[in-house]
Image (cartoon, rainbow, N blue to C red; front, side):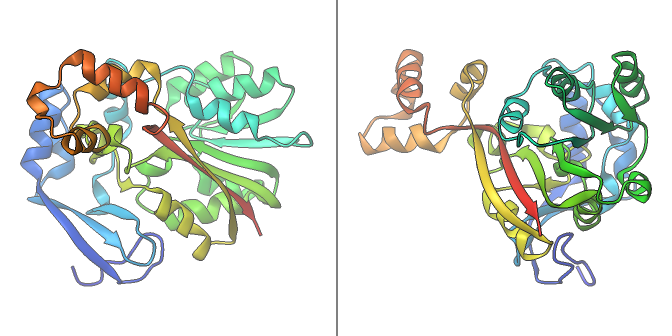
Amino acid sequence: MQNLKSPISGSSNIRLVKDIPSIEVITLYQDAGIDVSRFFENILNISIYECLDSGYQFYYPFTIDGDGLFYQDLRSFPGYFREWKWEYGKVSSIIPSDTQKILEIGCGHGTFLSHLKSRGIKGTGIELTDSSVKECIQKGLDVKNELLSTHKIKHLEEYDIVCSFQVLEHISDVSSFVNDSLKVLKKGGLLTFAVPNNEASLVKYGSGIFNMPPHHMGLWSKNSLSNLEKFFSVKLQNIYFEPLPDYERDRYRNLNFPAIINFAYKLNWRIGSLSKRLLSFLLQIFKNQIKGHTIIAVFKKI
């Protein structure tokens, strides 16, 4: 499409990956009991584009991201919210001992902030869901109902670490979000993003509607995360992959996942002959090579 530019590079160096009829998306959500038709009025198709400068894939149009009512509907969806996440523990483990102030963008129910408080670390959160903000305040947490673009005005270069967990993939204006995150971060501070790893089979093959608008607006990978340092004042420090958690193994057995399928083909096995016990056995063998849902990128502001 003419004048369409990458949300990361601002360049027109993009390619069309796929068009998806809007009615297919609407129907998939309807099957899950969620009405999203209001997001697709007068929109016949949505598209996935790839930024050729960064490898980042994104949905278009940018106006189909979810609103408060949509996320309220998701609250009733079984398994959508998990109290403690792998990424909380991983980020906690890399927090320097001299850290004084941390900002969490999109802090939800305040689980990570409560963990920081138990460690004696000052954590501040911003969150846009009223009920979640009230819950956090009742827990004695410092949480504000405001946008990052508003928060930055009074908190320039204030934080040692700025983090977000499962937020960046919902953002259509990636450049503004990253730049605003950096504005509230001290020079030399750490910026961490935890997002679904779209190269992991659990996400690529098993996320279904939750990997589409109005839920997700971007599809991240190790490559696209790493390339953020080409466009922003950051230096990549590390990438962490979630290992396949035990509670995801049953769901993984039902996927068309390449690692085990390819292994089976090499041994000339027919897929239909693979029993559940054999799949379980192979999962156990390859569990350390199978990536879970999440990838974390850690950057230093330069």
